[in-house]
Length: 286
Image 1 (cartoon, one colour):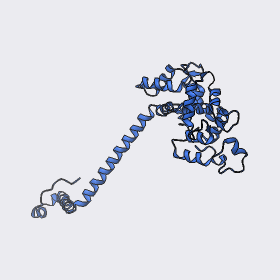
Image 2 (cartoon, helix red, strand yellow):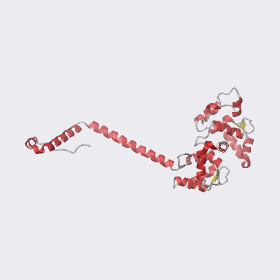
Image 3 (cartoon, rainbow, N blue to C red):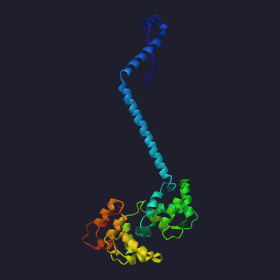
Image 4 (cartoon, rainbow, N blue to C red):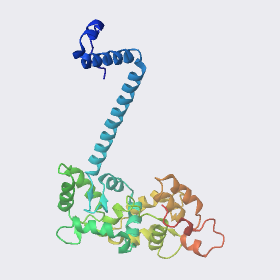
């Protein structure tokens, strides 16, 4: 900021009046400062540009922080900052095909309780009536606690997408299946166990009968035919382990690389001496 304009100094008055000494010196210094700044415009311009850049930077940071806070406000979270439910991630799960959901369900049923402690605590928090399952009302109330202006219609759609057996309740395994990917629980070891669980005869591939068996009372021929098509990349009416990996890791590009590097079924890998890459080298790597 430039100093205010100072009038010219009367030299004769300065010499004759000693009482005005301090005032005159101050005026002289102000005049000198005025001349210095007038003769050097570039430092002032440079300073102004830097200040403007800093202001813009602070503004952008505030906007980003606000957007993050708004996004975080839509998630249900434990008090200690542990597990969360991100509605965007749940919506992504609801758009998966029936086969991928079934594999995630099979994986959820093989998880040890200690591996998913935080998610279990979150499930219990939402299940306010201690029924062992989550109702639509409980899910809406949980989201409202996180963000009062939640879109109830959206929550209803999410609920229907997670309620795989259409029972009107979200059971614990359904809950885990829906959150598995967003919480980094989909690993090669767990997928291997899920594959073995579905391929209960140890054939090295999943076929129509395997899916019929795991669906039980929910079996429908047309549905299973669609499930086979979903993962049958080789078009031979069956799904081997390589195809399973390609299905489950189709979003991260790395998933396709893993699928191509493991040509054998899990059981074959454990017994063959011709493996290209042991599964153990990818332990817990999605």
